[in-house]
Amino acid sequence: MSGERVQVTIRKDLVEKARKFIEEQGGFDSLEEFLDFVLETVLEEEGPGTEMSEEDEEKVKERLRALGYM
Image (cartoon, rainbow, N blue to C red; front, side, top):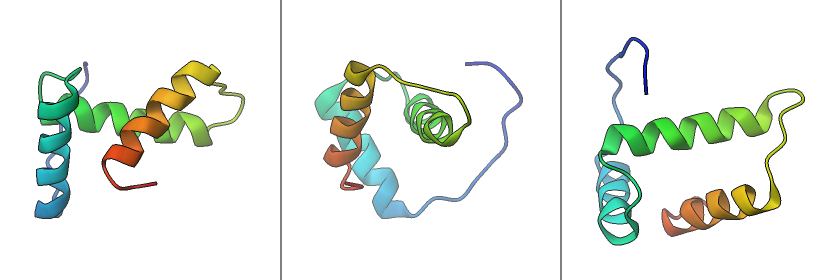
């Protein structure tokens, strides 16, 4: 992770769901790292010419389902 950081406001219930997900699933060292991953993944999916492997796509979908987004 690199780049300048900015502060954002996120609903408390989503923060708690994300923290619970991190505790249960692992794979992330912080809430910020998790949120960076989710945003980058969603934005890459919407970007032109960007393709994910089926395996990566399934991992993202599993994580988003666990958070209640899907």
